[in-house]
Image (cartoon, rainbow, N blue to C red; front, side):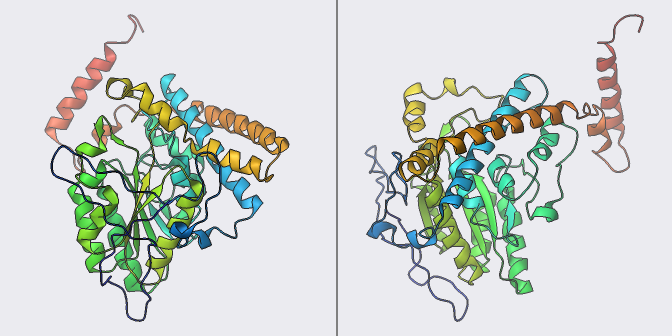
Length: 399
């Protein structure tokens, strides 16, 4: 329930701006030997049992959600439930052969909905390929996310229509895009902010380190939101970093915060705080949302080969949706009618997604060859001919 800050002693900020605070500061030492120090505490406002927490350690962030209404809480719950249903439907469609691949967000709903609802309309989002919940918050129709995974388009929506960039498949590159965009925002004199999403695996990419450098030096109004779901495909976080990921911000001279990624209120509060810093000219912030990928990395992955059931079951007990439901019920903020109506809405969303995907055309199998070179290439022509012959080999005789 504590925030750990890695802010520099003299944080970079624009003239006239006030230094931000990250609440209680502690020092965590990581030894170089086999002995491992205890994990740092999290910013947490809602416990896994659904109990609202308000204490000295959360004082810096609690004001950002202290006035939240019952209607807004129900809205956060609705967002998470419908996002999970859409995600489950997409996974099923991939298993049925309707999609080529799907990257599930199962377990990460609170991190995405909490941070997504912290954004203003004029803020700009640079996602990876798993930010289905953030897309929902930005008003992107869920069915538009599926065209790329079916192979019928290269995106599916206008990025400028919702200030939500197209999904980025190359790991970590979107952090550089976000930093450059944020530098432009600052030069234009706008007071909006930029947020870049990435995972724990991407934090090891050189692009992310370069983005941290440029954003710090140019005091860019950008928030780096790392969803640490514990596994970069089959590689655990402890094999990627000697220190907790949020502490990496210290070496670049800006604050880093670790938040309970399964606590939608904490994610909402911390992201609001970081965005406020960015808009106020105080530069970048790194948020590490400590969460868990309860499903496979993608539908081509088998997580049972590298992690055990005990770990998964332990994290399922911290389920972000169940956590908020417990709070809603204990606080009399939602009744059975609300949950029943939401279940009906969830079923309707599932049907709409299935119908939309099955109405999509089959992918153009030869489009990949058309988009390789602007003026054609002899080797591509040869490969196209080989692929055409391979496809023709499946045709029935006499057809």
